[in-house]
Image (cartoon, rainbow, N blue to C red; front, side, top):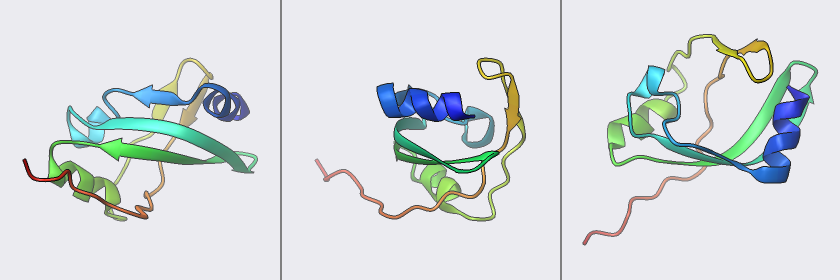
Length: 94
């Protein structure tokens, strides 16, 4: 998945419906950095947003299971490992 890393580092990437198969609709992801850490593993830095707090809770839960996905663009199968949420913020109350 070197090509995916190169693309993200050059162009960033907006996932308008990030992992809707796991979280349902409405999760947005902005990927802005990628680093290959093993020949078959990339590490990504990104910002995730959702109006549904439960979706963020599930994303940050290390026990959430992610199904294997086929990526046509890179002709490969991949799976997300548990996410590490380093900071969380709620929008200011209106």
